[in-house]
Image 1 (cartoon, rainbow, N blue to C red):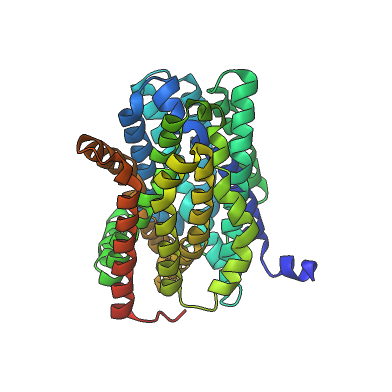
Image 2: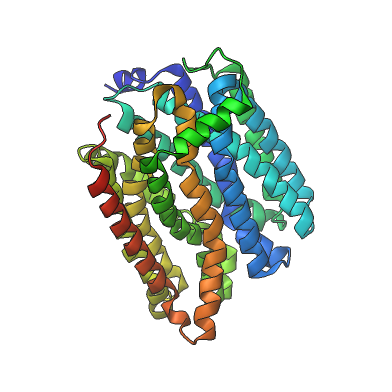
Length: 406
């Protein structure tokens, strides 16, 4: 039975999945401590740390819009190999960085490499699965991301505390991405997606303009951005909030980043199977409503039970995330024309670019505004209200556009 399951998916699928695992292991090792590293260890402060986090997120998820089209024309293997070289070098530069300017440059290099990778992996999953296996395939893809993101914080904490030098995490990440590069070079092969035409920048921008004229796609992108603005708080303002409640949590802050992935590893596949029985948009809306409750509870839990108990709010968030995140990738892949798959998947990353890019900075602005008015305890309930507005907007969107047939 197990053998039949693995044979369902083609060799490029499994090669891409393993490369994604290594990439996530590196990426989340860096991310688990990054906001604290920038704010406290490099002494940049919360505002500059959140600016860097937001910029890195934005570039990492905006650039796939362009890179997706290049992948369609140049080939997935070639594009993937370039991305892994960029990221290996970027981590080395981050290790050497010791100022705002140098760390900013290093993080931009990492963002570019990650942007090159994203549409290639998602496109491979789509092109190597059929209609029956598509939802399980995307669930495997999502589980693997979370296996890497579960192990990574533990490794990051181990490297940081045992070595006494948090920047050594970047060297570890460079080595992991180098291993992924070797796999892409020798084991990964292109699925049948490569277009024989040479890449044309004028045609690409024409295609991009035409795609963005699709009101259905553009509306989804704008509404769904709100979800990722909330998610960005897990990597930015929530860790800073935890440390502000209890300074001792700084030494364990990576462990909070393990809650989301461990929940997803345990529950994503069964939840994915259940959700596959329903349309994409109602599944996404249900997940957002659960996440609304989770983000609203962060302040209440932290103040009344202690900083460590915020892990329970993060666990509840993970349940909602399992319902909305893989289905959103699937939704965009379903409405994409076959010859513009990577382009549309690239555009599908725009909500992450907008939401993750703006979220850390907007969270800081909201926090400062509420503190000025003496209502700092309303920060996370205000974020919950925002989540409700996003869910209601998507409900209206679903009523307007109705069912999408795969």
